[in-house]
Length: 407
Image 1 (cartoon, rainbow, N blue to C red):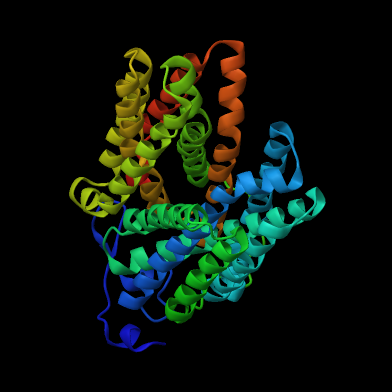
Image 2: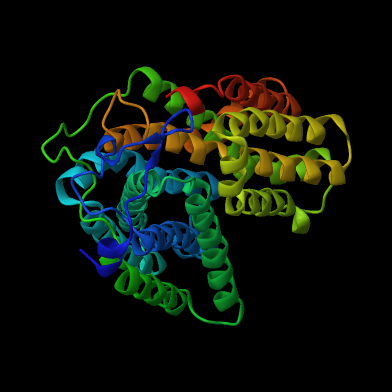
């Protein structure tokens, strides 16, 4: 128990209708109440997750050249990262319950640090597949377990914090991609650049790691995996839609701008960049928005705003309108997933750790399925219609905003 945990007063937890719950209603009642340092360690872990995975993105062209593969083979190779995450996510919640958030985040982060350098030197496709599976599993483990810790810490604090936590993931993403690109741009070798990233991750772990929660649930001997049901399954479905929209922006926004709006290839990345910036701003300011208006309104108007952003990009046939629309999509969707994760901490149908694990798996499946779904619909009809399908799905999220208050 650290000193901050001892001295901080007990904070009441928020109920689903905004009233307070007794501390013994919270999942942390048998443990020291998480305090300031636990909150800071949660933010650091979110930063590490975003920082680690984004550092891989600038390395993809180097891997393609080193392995001598074409675009089709590279696409299949990149699926290994997602496959590694999907394989571990269903079990991450139970592992966190048995061994604690601290140990699982430490182990997973160390595997990130170990696998990243090998991604710069793997000289064959089989070796790269193995490293990507390990790297993906480590990223998936951190993503799930840090959300479990975030649910516990937020509930104990008695105030909205989830959007800010997720905002640090976005900040980490920008810092990781920016740092790697900057180092590579000045002539640093991929291996040395990655080692710099590893040093930063290790430093954050050494400084903040001691404040990570040594527990992940009160059910240490619970089931290893439980199929989601009821409200948990429905929240997972809503997260699947939002992550699907994010995945669609990642892989198809540049194609939309170049093929339908005549944007130069050198500027094709502006759409996703603006989407990402808007999402980061939305999340970093989201806690105040959620506290003022409530999760239900955030999901309702966020879903409508995100759908409207896609509609603007499609209906107004200019590249500037498309950029504005992508930014509106990022802003509107920014706080939906954090609010839904907060709802998981209030539902009583499943233990919070298993619920977070199940929903993270479903949500991440949306990231993987989104680009393929968009491509299939676009092949059958056209890309604009495919984006309209995503907008319609986001309206389903908006009309389901009651789950943010009633779970």
